Length: 140
Image 1 (tube, rainbow, N blue to C red):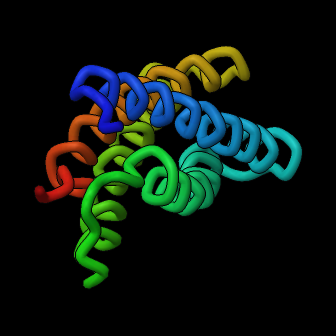
Image 2: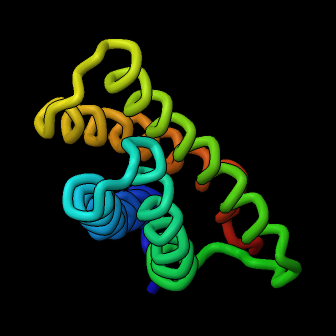
């Protein structure tokens, strides 16, 4: 039995949200570990765990969230995924850097609010771009 487009969209959105939640835990947990416990810089502390989260997210989205969508196996999907994630990570880094360096808000609460804002905007971009360019609908 095939799922309706509405049901498929809802399943994909919920799965994407769960993968995003786990990725957020990886990113925020890793950023705070690097920043506050290991003394890393505010931008580096966002980039490293975001890259780890990106790898997890690709695998989880390809093999779970968007499993019913085509993959040509050429590597095109991986390259586009990571390029679009670079844009999403840039959104996160810009917000974190702006908060820390431009606004001068260097405390833990401001840092985590900036992380969440960046993650939210970056995630919205990622979901839209994945559906449009990475995990394309299966051909009939």
